[in-house]
Length: 290
Image 1 (tube, rainbow, N blue to C red):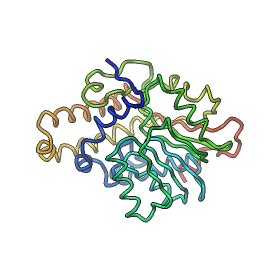
Image 2: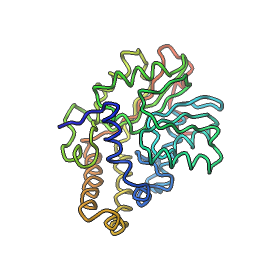
Image 3: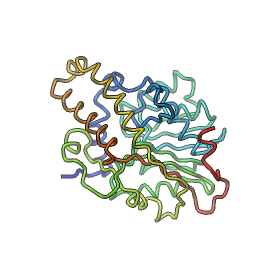
């Protein structure tokens, strides 16, 4: 049975996957603990280089300028928020309901000297308040559930400034289909990868304007190849942390996801949007690649 994504249920669902120990994720993610699709302009890039390239790709799409205020819905271990502050001169409020991730991100912000420019808040996206020049959310929409897309849209409408713009990155699919029941039970309770049409339930009610859509599914397949290789190299350590059954379970999740993106049964959508009638936006994609 598909699990709810109410305020309480969302905390349980996120805890199931993300609060199983930062040391586990350190074994196979990049050094910045970025747990979303990397971006490989060159196939020779390392995972570390590709994750930085992804963060820059996102920041350029958002046209960030020094002094602007940014809100991040679902910030993971804080890499993107800190990158935006450090490299683009913005201030960030970043929200997450994973206690382990928030504690790690706060410690990292303090150690990096960025605690005055990046605030990590342990709270649900539905409780975000304030006005911001830009909104970004990478890899969280999958955990929201279609029943709550209008809640997500209301949050955006409440928080985005009149000239604001935003970017949502989400695993998706080409037509509506149920989440794999094994993934739902064992790996990601409450998850659902939407179609682009379903995502419009976020944007249409508050009358937001879509500026750009990009599908990076082959980049996610490559990201997963890197993760799986690192996971396999640490399989013995993982088995000692948990057990052999856990190793088999996560091996299947990573390998199966890699196959799904390579075969095209899963997509990776980046959707850029703004208020309607905002004309101070790039007319081409040239700045993304310069």
